[in-house]
Length: 61
Image (cartoon, rainbow, N blue to C red; front, top):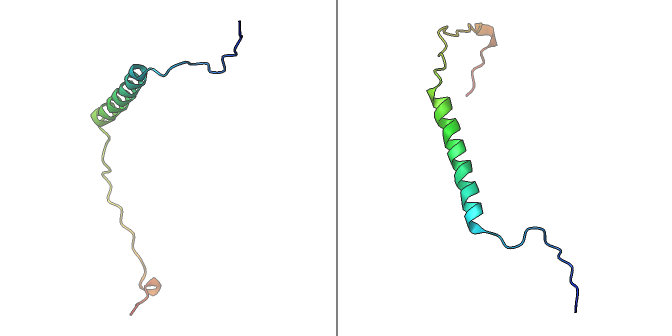
């Protein structure tokens, strides 16, 4: 009788488990995108205006 050492922890890779994990990740990302889209972020109401003095302007040719 010959003894052998098992070096791998997992065994054979089950493609069904990988597909299920990928689908769950895609659904989670899609859910986060839909949730963020539903939030109504306010738009800025104040118009930003900065006056630049004429001495700071340079003419480039």
